[in-house]
Length: 246
Ligand code: SF4
Image (tube, rainbow, N blue to C red; front, side, top):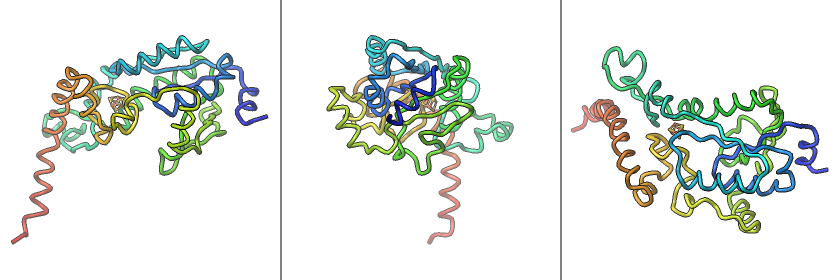
């Protein structure tokens, strides 16, 4: 019996968490023989790309069980501020007492509040005991969880955790599955939120400008707010680094 078959044999309530990226798409199609035994869960952040929602609708027509979870990114941004890769002290709780500036939150907090925590709450509410993901080791310096771990009372199964990107692309091709176009367009991965003001290394601006110009304008407007909060700090830093030159 394979590790996958053994894991499925141990559990009755099994979730496959589908993000919309190529890794989860690959893992999902690898598990075709197990589709009847699991529910595919997808979290809608509230600022979703239409191409990802189209993919989810296509999957809904393929798998027997699909559940959607709502992530309410609008509420998270309203309460904790726009996400950013850099957080200036003027945007923290104490800093804002002095500056009155906009609050910002770091990108990992925003993703946790919007995506991970609502998804985990839904797993608990639905009595899930096995979670399957397309997680791969190459995405982490040191993965916090690995296949076979039990976390918060739920077993984790990562069928492609040791695969390379090339293996994933070859497997998708062999299964006749098209990877989301984000990758061919130069994005680092499948993008979660259209107007996210963090994850600056993902290639969002060029992708939005080409495919979603109205959202690109909204993204630039929000990103300018983040940049304006950062600029005074960067200027002070530069002055401190250059004051003794010449
Ligand atoms: S992708 Fe950006 S906006 Fe969406 S949850 Fe993550 S940090 Fe927040």
